[in-house]
Image (cartoon, rainbow, N blue to C red):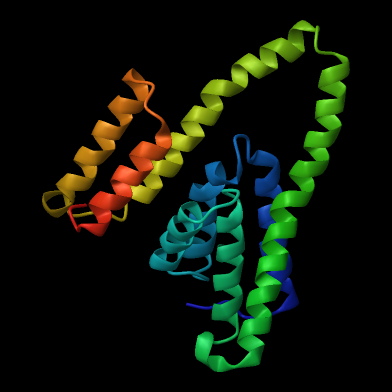
Length: 198
């Protein structure tokens, strides 16, 4: 799976991620399902494994969750250059892929957020501003659920993956019903994974 390193393909990648930037209510991770459709199914620029690994690695690393976009761009560029063993051109295209996807995902939403926030702050007492803030909460939650559903789709062996589903259900209940800090749950999941139980 690789992208032909033509200016048109890079422009398509940039424009798609720029449009997703404006839809990324709740963060870039909420647009992961459409990124998956575009990069894996529609264009074949990444494999399903590369896509899910990029998200998993970036979410495990410290820093903002938008780092998965950089890894997606890295993998697209690396594939366009012929893979890791193809030499300096592959590594240069990987860096270019990072720049293309990160600028595309950050620039439009940052400009829109800055402009809208200034306006909303000046007009915070208007009913429309308060209604907008209240109405966005269910949309963000639905987008996060769609992302979670996509990421669990790679586990297509329910008989084998039942411990993972059980851990997910227990963690969900603990978050919902207790005030247990999320870092404890992340640590418990990491420990269970290191032991090979999930």
